[in-house]
Length: 185
Image 1: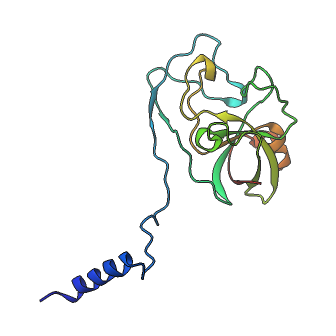
Image 2 (image 1 turned 180 degrees about the horizontal axis):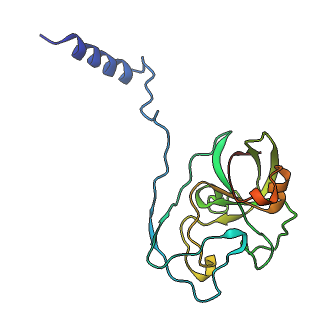
Image 3 (image 1 turned 90 degrees about the horizontal axis):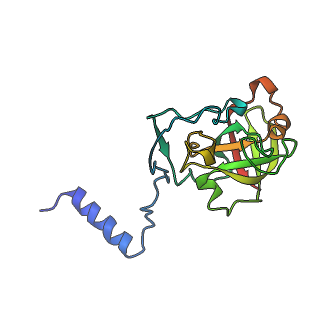
């Protein structure tokens, strides 16, 4: 004789396979797991870019790399960091710090598919700002000349110009790392 539990389980399986019960086997939240590790190299003298309190790679230290970022939602959680987008600075682009521009972690940048799109960033103080995506904060590589001898970005970074920080009402002395939410506009 079968137990009531095994009969119930069998009924659920049959109902699900016949379409009589809507069971979502993909209901668990999507995650982004590390894709690997990168061993830090010692930067040549005066070659590590320390603008905006940027971190330099440490020889032998293992840095986590990511090919993905958390899923984008209407309120994607992220860490806001400060980047100089002036030519020859952190971002290395041709933009100015007065422009509201951002670099997204590799997964969110999505092989340039997010480039030139606009995003809305909201800070904990309730203020929000719209900015344009112009660059990638590389989560897959780092600790080399191309990346100013800085480690790979975490997978949840929105790296922004000073103009974005100012628009969010964050005082200059407090600009650096801030928990925010963002979404595509």
